[in-house]
Image (cartoon, rainbow over all chains, first blue to last red; front, side, top):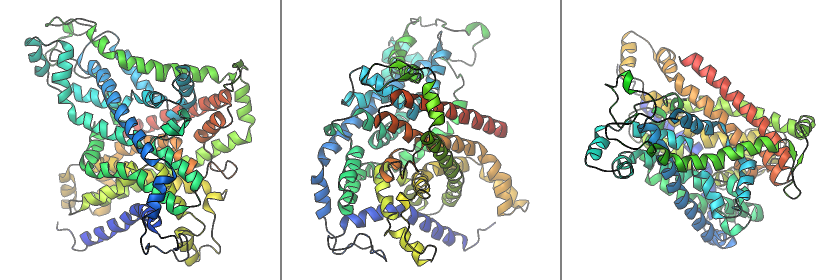
Length: 274
Length: 319
């Protein structure tokens, strides 16, 4: 069966048309941010090309709110949260995958039950717990509740279970203790899974909105998404500056995505096959 | 869900499993190397601590608080079922519930069917196809606040969408999409759908790529056309992935927040406020923590029902 000759061109046209729908809103941000002050942002018909392109509004957005501070904060949240949640998930997944012990099933079902505690339902009580611990309006208050994730535990548990038993056994024969085996023998084996968790952890921490909104009062601790919403609510009328701010906020995560595109798509497909 | 389904007990080392007779099974067996029994528990300490502090404790707090009046300032006061009575007689609650239901009804079909078409579209071994996959996935990783800002320009009274509608003669005057009680919620749903399409597409793509290609070759030999191949091979084999999308779609539809916050603020007059948004605003704008917790429990019950129903449906079909 030879494919029909028009099938491939038609597919390209369709793919490109759909791509336009996905890229369009990004282009709108881009052109709006670059429009000079004397060019209408909104007009019939829409004037798409910013001419002459102006970077004033990028500079203006950068100074309108402390963007540098917010980017740094987001970086701190990522750098603190992602290793924490990878470590806690790995430590939890490992015994569930590799040891037989009393209470294993119970532990597994307890972790499973997290999936049923949806974030929007947990918002208030978790806020109250965090304030009970004196962590409201602190970096730790934003970071700690993300320390354990059920999906992280499940993915790592599968990865640990797939390691052949000869590996830890030979290390045992060599006299390594169980923690050393976990750290030096088993953990390197699940590196691909850890990478997937790291990438998705980065995105979800960077984009997290409602939890920091609830926990933080002091705007000096805002992550970038909150800072951008703040810019939007105070300078909403100035579309060029807000669009410029949106570009600043989305650039880092989009760059990471483009740089690690393969890991993203394969990682997500891998987690589905599991 | 695949993740849960395959999470059934698997091999438990340290000793290789295959030759294990029944005599060697059972909990807490010691093993040949003589490792101490406390070791697995030591590994579990951090995980269980986090589970206790950030999941179990809040869950019990949530249940307890629903029966109290609590505004953070004065001490909680037990009021029995009053919070639930207030909810069921409050027009705002019913409006939020209705909005959540409408949200689900609009969102779910779109994110379950459109991504399948996208996946079929980009499931071809041709040049540059991965670039298109990448572009379709781009919104998934983009912060929702930035996305919502971009779309607020699309929905602007003098924005591109209104211009197109006027040019096509669909409307006579521009629509204030985000301020209009009819259009605010669908506008939010449209943005959430756009945001999620790539995510669901990748799920379907995994499903499509798991189908052995010789099935299609054999079907083609037997004279099955494009449509027949789709309905007799692709659809049945993709069904488990369909179920995953159904469940995740339901979960995601309840989690919309930043989009509502930025685009409409829940307005006009609560017209685009879903239950999740309503809970947040009752608690953190009006400080009715007890009442908001009660609404949270109602939402929780609805979510568990949805999960149970969709689990049953997908199991009944896929098995």
